[in-house]
Amino acid sequence: MEVTVKDNNVSVVLPERISEVNAGEVNEELNRVFSEHKGENYALDCAELEYISSSGLRAILNVQKKLHGHKVILYNVSRAVNEILEMTGFDNIFSIYKRMKQISIEGKKAVSSGINGDLYRLEHDMMLKVYRRGISITDVENEREMSKKALVCGIPTAISFSTVKVGEDRYGIIFENIKGESIADIIKKDPTEWIELSYRWGRFVKSLHDISIEAGLLPSIKDRYRGWLDEIKDRAPMGEITSMRNLVDSAEGSNTFIHGDMNPCNVFLVDDEFLIMDMASCGYGHPIFDLQAIYASLVTIELDNEGYTEKTFGLDKKKCIGLWNTFLRGYLGAAVTTPGGSILGENGEGVEAISDKKLSLLLTQYYILKEKLINNL
Image 1 (cartoon, rainbow, N blue to C red):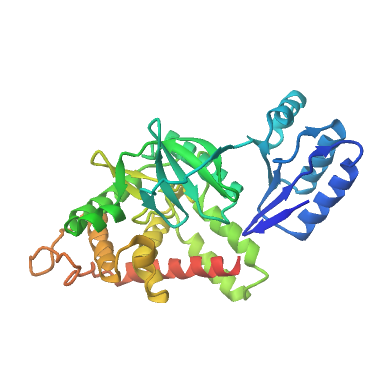
Image 2: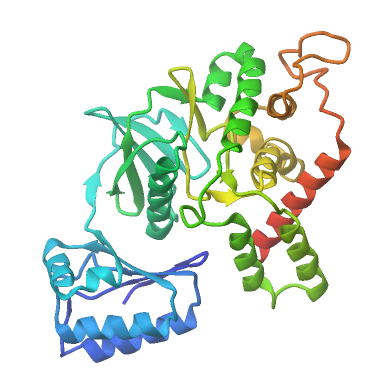
């Protein structure tokens, strides 16, 4: 059985048939794979599976029990196998995703590009987000589920419909058509728009941070960070783990909506209203987690990786610093002028950051925290 391991996702391709003939062998092999490759999410790829007997069902159920509560999904499930799962009640035990429709993007041009994928316009007023190679089906399905949950919470995001296969090794999600452009694309087309746009972006994010999320509707950002800390506790010095845990715990007293990766490619202007995409990292928690992510995308990542903003957003370093400074003024409701009273320059020169060293230090601390976690995971 083919095994794929990426980040915290472990996926195994099941054989064409699982019956009393090979159920024991399948059970033994799955237990071996999942014990050797520890992960957060486990997936069984049913693309080749055309039949499963009661002994086969018991085999995968036995594997599920031994994972002690970890999520197991069955995807690429055929209609025939899905009928068996529904008839036996196994659809209540596993997360099941039916075999995906195959879509071609040959001859189509992306209307927008982000860090983890590209957007294409399709017929019938639909859009397709195609993920980069290597992004697992588990991560794709997680974003679709988070998009649905965020929409229910009143967050302005596009309706997500179905997951599809694109080519041999990429996945995508069908969304409602977004008749607008990302902040990055708008600024690239008309550089004079960046001041007003980034200020409005700041006001928009502040309005999102006024939305309280009821417990259970979205995941806790702090719990996500704590889970990462638990994963790396044996790979980093105890003093460093304690310091990072204290930083996470200090972000108290808020259950506001958090997007988690609100960079200029993920925020769209649609009919003069903002809409956000890429919901995989969303949850609830303290606004510092969102501000850190925006600050990192516009300022701090560039310091360690020169050319990052140009490559990722098509915007140069100076412009992105200007975006951050104006965004922050919008977020805090400050005036969009320099101390001398002049309007901010088009190219970002003369743009002064709000002089709050404590905030800059705090944002940098959370950026370093996340970088350490990612590097150790």
